[in-house]
Image (cartoon, rainbow, N blue to C red; front, side):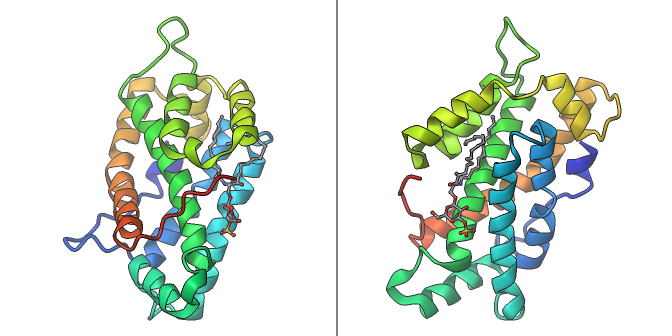
Amino acid sequence: MALLMEHQFRQLSADRQVETRPFLDAVSYLPLFFDCLGPTIFAPIKVDLIGNITKIKAVYDTNPGRYKTLQQLLEAEKEMCGSEWPRVGATLALMWLKRSLKFIQIFLQSLVDGEKDQSNPNLMRVNITKGYDVALKRYHGWFVQQLFKAALYAAPYKSDFLKALSKGRDVKEEECLEKIRKFLINFSANIDAVYDIYSRMNADLDYKV
Ligand code: EIS
């Protein structure tokens, strides 16, 4: 929890523009989130996520003034890349990054909403599967979907996951969930705003990996 609460996302202003720099600062802590699920088996996911963030940051650093907001960044690439866009550069990296963020969002929301397998309340398979189904499944072919099903069995117990999120401190479940609830307010607003950019600019692609 400490992990999430110490690196909150910014509250959006009235125009709902997402500023690139603070967004990148906040997402740079999220790969650690996958360590809390299990550092070894989920390492490839973490690598993918870090790759997305690194790519967006590399583009941003070439001209921070011009790419002040994520929308400006996409608009600039659209103008520069012609028919290759949106399957290029930071636009492609953010397209995938937003799906991983959405996965985290739906998974955490389901936890705080108390959705659980009544016969195994300390398992998180219901919550993880919901995140996956909403955010990622349709972009994965048969093989990756099978990997997901296998990986689900390596997911930790809820109590261990919450403890890892709290940096090893034994915090009461309800206290943890309350902090996640607070974290989700700005986090979800940022993700929704990024999804809106992709739908407004017709920048999302439907291919499967
Ligand atoms: C994108 O990745 C890149 O992110 C993007 C660019 O290269 C683009 C080109 O098409 O591809 O292929 C990736 C996709 N990312 C697309 C899949 C990675 C999944 C890792 C599979 C490795 C297997 C072994 C580990 C076992 C875990 C399996 C999980 C499978 C989903 C139980 C909890 C599971 C949680 C899973 C949720 C998070 C998954 C996030 C994956 C995102 C994804 O689908 S660019 O790179 O533009 O920056 O260069």
